[in-house]
Image (cartoon, rainbow, N blue to C red):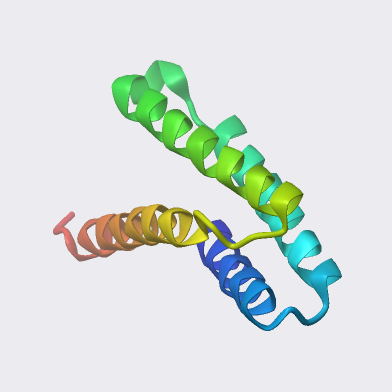
Length: 105
C-alpha cells in the first residue's frame, strides 16, 4: 500500500508541475512521499535482510533526495526516475506475494 500511495503522489506531483496549477498540492504530495520513504526505510530489518535491506535503504535514500530536490526547486525533474524505481519495487513485491500465496504448503 505504501508503494501504491507513493506512486499516486508522484503522478499527482508531476501533473501539477506540468500544468502549474496548485503548487501547494505538489508540495504536500512530495512531503507525503518523503514520509512514506522514511517509513519504508525504518521498517527494514538489517539483521534479517542483510545486503538486500542495505540495498533497499540506499534506493530509498536516493529517492528521498530526489523528492526533496524536486520540492525545493519546484520541478518534476527526477520524479520519473523515482517512479520507475518504486514501480519496479512494487511489482517485485506483488510478484513475491503471489508466489508465496500460490506455493504449496
